[in-house]
Amino acid sequence: MPREDTNRYDRRMSVLSRLLTRPPRTVERDTVPFLLEDGRTVEVLRVRDPRARRLRLSVDERGARLTLPPRASLISGERFLREHRDWLVRQLATHAHVPIPPLVRGEPASLPLRGQALPLRWREGRFARVLREDDGLVLELPARAGEAAQRRALRDFFETEARADVARWLPRYLPALPRAPARIRVKPMSSQWGSLAPNGILALDLALVLGRAEAFEYVLVHELCHLIHADHSRAFWREVEGRCPAWREERTYFHAEGRRLKATLRALIG
Image 1 (tube, rainbow, N blue to C red):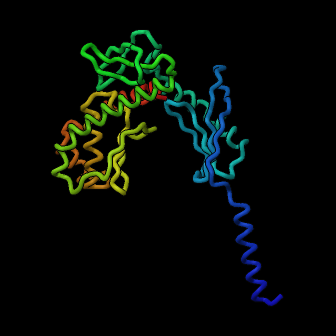
Image 2 (tube, rainbow, N blue to C red):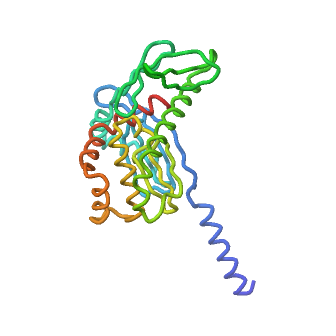
């Protein structure tokens, strides 16, 4: 075989070898039990992420999560869990909220909205929906509707209320901005309260509508100010303070109540 053909063949084989040995690009998930010192067993979500560069253990209201890089062995993951057992116990205790009693169909309850607990009644109806009435809220459900329909009705209600708040506040701030957000999305977010993407899409956490309105408005202001300054420089915080002088108080509110709000939303809508 001529040398040029040999080199071309070697290059092709080298590329093929890299492709065959390249770690998988899909995220793989499973759940493993882990025994704590006090005898409790907790479920740990084990995630093999092709983007991960190191082992990582994290805890939030959903529980514990162990992230493994593509080439990390399961044994190394188990050893990492054992080495961080004390830290895991402390974090689980920090996130151990009982945010709201489970809703039982037909039994009087309450729903959080804008920092208040509103009375909730049940009623049979043609559609799954939450209605406002003078004495509180009514959750209407068809006779055969299950928990999934109930959760969707609650999510739709909270999203409608959150969008109503944004629509009420936004005109106050738009004139002083260089441009308007390309789009505003309200959705459950795992850790953040809001974000502004490079394409101008502004996202807000649905759990914001459960807490006090002033804190929700602060998050909206914070993200809108990123249309002026993309960073968290002093100039950025001057823009925030000019629009929301009490921003430090609202940020403290999230430190105290944020986990409970997110856990409550998760308990209500899944």
